[in-house]
Amino acid sequence: MSRSQILIVLAAIVLVAVIFFLPKVVVNEEDKAGFAEGETAATVPAGHSEDDGHDHSAHEAETSAESAHMAASPEQLMELATVRAKYNKAADPKAKSRLAGELAAAYTAVSKFDSAGYYYEIAANARPGEKSYKQAGDSYFEAFTYATSQQRASELGVKARSMYEQVLKNNPSDLDSKTNIAMTYIASENPMQGIMLLREVITADPNNQKALFNLGLLSMQSNQYDKAEERFRKLVAVNPGHVEGNYYLAVSLAQTGKKEEAIAQFNKVKQLSDDPALNTSVDEQLAALQ
Image 1 (cartoon, rainbow, N blue to C red):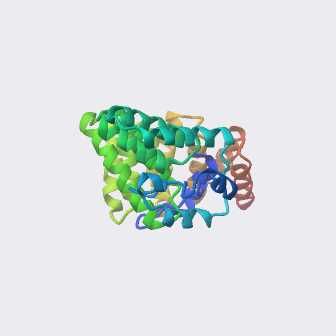
Image 2 (cartoon, rainbow, N blue to C red):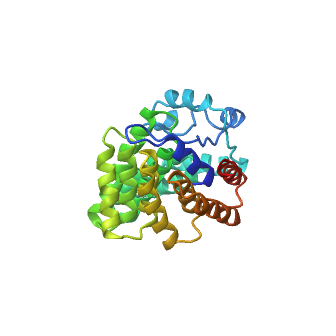
Image 3 (spheres, one colour):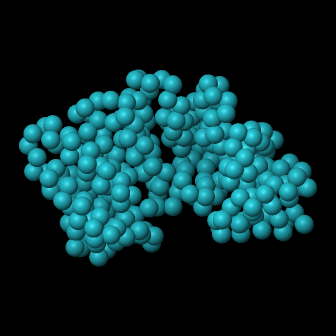
C-alpha cells in the first residue's frame, strides 16, 4: 500500500463504513478494444471473459467510468491472452488447475487483483494448501483495498475472508491473515469483530506493525488521539523508519496539544519521506502549528 493511499485511508476509514481507496484499473479503452471483448477485472465470484461463462458487463460499466487508468504493456496483454487461451482449451483437470495459477500470476502482473484472486481460488480448490489459499486471499484483499463502492468492498471482503479462513485452519498463528480479515470486518457492518481480531493479534504479538498501525488509525478516526499516540509510539519504537507511523504519531501529538514534540516529529518525517504528497501534508501541518 503506497503512502498516498495511506493518506486516503486516514480520511476515509470509519468504524461503521467502508474503506474507500483509489481505483487501480489496468486496461485502457484502446487495450480493451484490441484485446478481448469483455476482458476486464473480475467481479466476485464471476467476472471473467465471456468464454469463461461469466457475465462481465456490470464491472465493465464500473471500471470504464473511472478516470484513473494504468495501461498494461502490449507484452503483458499478450502474455495474459496466451495463458487465458491455454486455460480455456485445457481439458485435463490437473493441467487446468496449473494453468489457473499461471493465469492468476498473469493477472497479478497487470494489477488486476480480483481476477487474480478468482483464478488463485480455482487453483487452491483444486490443490488445497496454505500457500495457495494465502495467494487467493492476498489477491482478493488487495482488490478490496481498491474497491470503489461499498457493495464491491463487501463482496471482495467476503471472498478474502473465506480464503484466509482456510489458511488459518492450517496455520492458526498466521497473524498477517488474521489482520487482513480484521480489516475486512472493519469495513463491514460488523466493525467491532475486526477490532477484536486486531486486539487478538496484538495480544499474540505486541510488536505486530500492521496491527499497531491499523489500531492507531482507528483510534484517530474515533478521535481517541491519546490512544492513537500510544499505538504509533509503539510502532515507531519497533520500526523507527516507518514513515506513515511517524507521520500519524506527529498528527496525534499535535491533536493532544504536544506542539513542540509534534513539530520535531513532523520534521523527522520530512527526513524519512521522499513522497511529495506526504511532504506537502507535513508542510501544511507545520504551518498550522506555527
